[in-house]
Length: 329
Image (cartoon, rainbow, N blue to C red):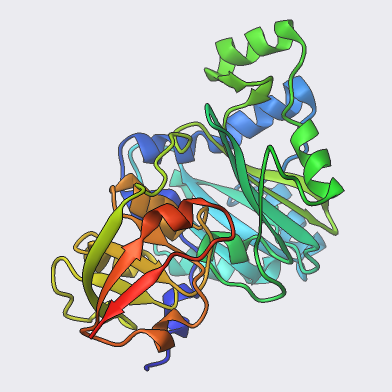
C-alpha cells in the first residue's frame, strides 16, 4: 500500500468538508458563541488574540510570544470572503505566512490562539435528544477530529457510562440548572437543552493552558447514526484521492480527509482503521447519508480489493462492538 500519511496531515474544518451555506455560517460565528458562553456561564474557552496587521499591538504580540506555537486565522472584514488559517507554526513565522497568502492585509483581522505543546487529554461529544455520546483520548484533539490514535485508543462514553472523573467535570460546565440562565441562552444563542445540558457538538481539551472548549456547534446534533441493517458490496481499498473509485463499492481506507470526499460520496459504505464515530470524516459521511464504520483495526489488511462482504451495521451501533464482516469469495 502507498504512503497514506498525506491523507491526514492538514487539519480541516467542517466548512472544508461540507462547503458553504449553513455550515459555513455556523463555523464563522463559533468564536462569538463561545465568547458569549464564557461571559454568561464562565465556560473555559480558547483565548483569542485579535489585531489589525499593521498595528503596534500586533508587532508587540509577535515579539513577546515569538517562540510559541499557535493557530492563526485571517478573518475577512467582508462577510462573503474566505477565511484563511494554519495551525502548529511558531508565532515568529506568522508574518511570513500571512504575506505568502498574497492578500491585502488591511482587508483582514489577524486572530491568534496558542497551540498546545503539552496536550493532556481531549474530548469530542454530542448532546441531543437521545442523550450524550462522546469520545475521549490522551493527547491532542487532532487525533479525534482527524481519526488518528497516536498516544492511546479512543475511549467511548455515554450518559449511561462515563469512564472517568475528567469527563464528569467537563460535562458540568454545560449543565445549566437555573431556568433563568437557560432562558437567556435560548434567547441569545437559540440554545436547546436535554436534561439541563446544552445540546450541541463540543470539542474540549486540557493542556498547559488549562481546560478549554474549542467548539460549540448547534447543527451537528441530529441522530444521524448508522442505520441498523445489512449492507453488501465489493471492497475497494483507497490510499489516494486519485484512486478510480467505482460507484457503489465499499470504500476501505486507513483514514479519510476532504480530498477523498468525491470518492466517499460514491461509496455504499465507508470503513476506516482509525478514528471514531465523532471524527470529522464519520460525521460528514453521516451528513451525506453514508454509513461509516471508523476504528476497525487492521481492516485494510484483513480485506482485499474486489472482495464481496456483508456488514452487519446493527452490531456497530452497540458501543465497543465490532461489526460482523461476512466475507464472500
